[in-house]
Image (cartoon, rainbow, N blue to C red; front, side, top):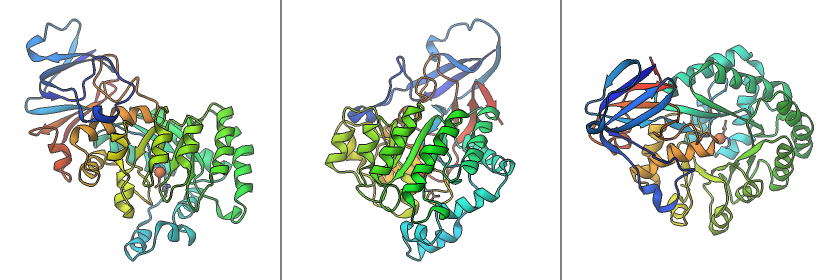
Length: 414
Ligand code: NIG
Ligand code: FE
């Protein structure tokens, strides 16, 4: 079953030979085709090119779409979210406006521990329904692949409950989903003052059970000031490695925590947040297989210093941008808005922001062979914009929904 999109004003992020990631100066380059066509065969991209080169399509064409005046983008890949959660935390949002810091709110039992209480009370079905609605929302905003973390359960039963919800979302939705076990998100109240014992519990009970049920693709630790130390992180990543869980680390959001270095030591797929990055961190990332990932929505919402993205790119590193969709520090999974924040706050050009939210986030969640660009044989996960003048208009019109039609796995999403 084939679909063809004709008269595409511009086909964006095209790759003849898919790359692993885009780094340094190449981040400002973007391959696009003007006046293009695209052929979808079942759930895959079969072919594309200039309209003037379009030949007769072999086989049944079930639908022809006309994209005159409109652009086609590969779906965003959002490589860092916590979108399974219960309730919302707007009270803390007010506290923040009144001047309390993220750490102060956490110390008062707010923050992650607030969400923990609500997750423990919620049934698996309740969690599934609210997360499913969030998945539908981000799909309509152009996201086609998403990584989702546990980390609000903080005991075996509740962490497994969250991971089972993610498993159901993988089965029931057309998005490409990866699951990350984040038992080390915070120390739960029953372990207060006994952090090392909680780390032992994660190593001896949580990781083996999560692994035996095959519920996680990756393991994450919040390695930062006031949360888990480098030593804790080292122990947990080591334990995770024995079960084949590759790390993705929350690092250097609150301080020069050593999280980047310990992540690289364990060949993390990504290190995320990165507000505190100096020369030593950049050196550690060079020649590694770890994707530096910045979360502009969290920095915006928490009023944090901005990660030195330009310095990282000037050093030749790749940079990815994800939403961090969660109830505390980034209650939005809108990747188009993430692009706008990247351009305004991090002085990225549109091409850099597109590379950072597609190819590089695909790498950061381990799906670069199937998602992240318009390439033959990759999944037909893409969106058609409304009539817009150029790629720059996407981050420029920061509050407008410019998406006209979403296609995931080759099917039009209503
Ligand atoms: O990525 N920084 C750590 N964890 C989350 C916040 C989670 C929360 O506040 O609920 C983050 O920003
Ligand atoms: Fe996060």
